[in-house]
Amino acid sequence: MNYNETQIKAVKEFLYKIADDQLIIGHRNSEWTGLGPLVEEDIAFSSIAQDKIGQAQHIYEILHSLGEADADTIAFTRNAAAFKSCHLVELPIGEYDFSLMRNFLFNHAEQIRFDMLANSGLEPLAKLAKKYRGEVKYHTMHANTWVRQLGKANEESHARMQTALNDTFNLALGIFEESEFADILKDLNIFPGEKVLQYKWIEAITPLLEQSMLVLPESSAWQPVYGGRKGFHTEYLEPMLEEMGEVFRLDPKAEW
Amino acid sequence: MRFSTLIKTTKEDILEALQDVKDPEIPTISVVDLGIITGVEVNEDNFVKVTMTPTFSGCPALKIMENMVKERIELLNISGVEVTTNFDTPWNTNMISPKGIEGLKKHGLAPPEKHNGLVQIEILEKVKCPHCGSRNTTLKTPFGPTLCRSMHYCNECLNAFEQFKPVE
Image 1 (spheres, chains in turn purple, red):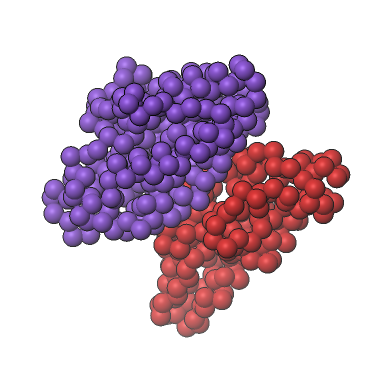
Image 2 (image 1 turned 180 degrees about the vertical axis):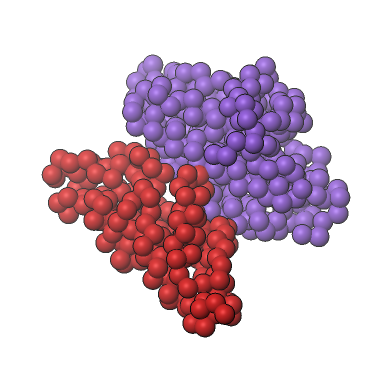
């Protein structure tokens, strides 16, 4: 890669954003281990967690090749302000409906992002994206199945899913907070932009929500929750990071 | 003079030896038949370079398999070995060999159906039951005891079973 200093900065920010989202939502999904409403859901959330954290790790390895710290150090020693993840992923797991709807909205965005990145000019990332999109397909499949089922099952499940959608939608729009480096990434054929992704995402989720009898908030009422990409986070991220990195920080040099 | 420099080890020798290295989670299939050995090179000095690729990005067995491959090759007549993992040739379930498919069956797993590069939800339904051969089966969940397995139920013989799930 023959990028200049600003271009490298743009690439790093982009990689951090994608991987941080995956690590944080991966950790949140892992918090369902042992708490799932069915044993199958316990396993599903735990497996999705394992996939996402594994995927984040390989992106951190690209960052390492660009001069950043190694993957474990990146994952376990930064404080909240250094994380580029969106607010959607950092909120506590809440009730099952909230976590499920969060996964539904996030996984679809991720699926489309990796589809777009499979042809990215950033070759190491394109290789990963080709691999990841097949794995994420199972994550979207899982979310689709349950959103559809619960959206239509009975009055209570429908009401819960609609409330979960109302509660998570503006947060999910925060996924698409544009970077100050967006033009650089576009010029380098790395990524065409968050707005392009958001447009495709709305197109993908709209029919699925309709089939589930759920109503997307009116676009005039959309209020994207931004800030995460710039390092501003909710009060929930720092305690989560404390817990996630606790064992690593006991002995950072330990051999595992 | 070291004996190792007299007789040339071939790529075929390496692949044959790696038949002994099994998937730690499915001991009836070798890493070669699983399709995760994506490159083998032996240079003039009998130095071996092996490239592997993970089945799933989050596969926890990856490091273990790398070490197992290295240790097995070290038993051969070679001057040294280097094992690296990358995504240059991404793995998909079509890369499992016919012998590998038999190995999965031997472990009681339904093998993945061949796909044309795209996995559709339909190929997860009606998976052939490894116990009775019926296709009157239902997908219970696309996630199982390991990342590579899904769980199914056979409506014919009333047994639960697992599939090594198709990945594109």
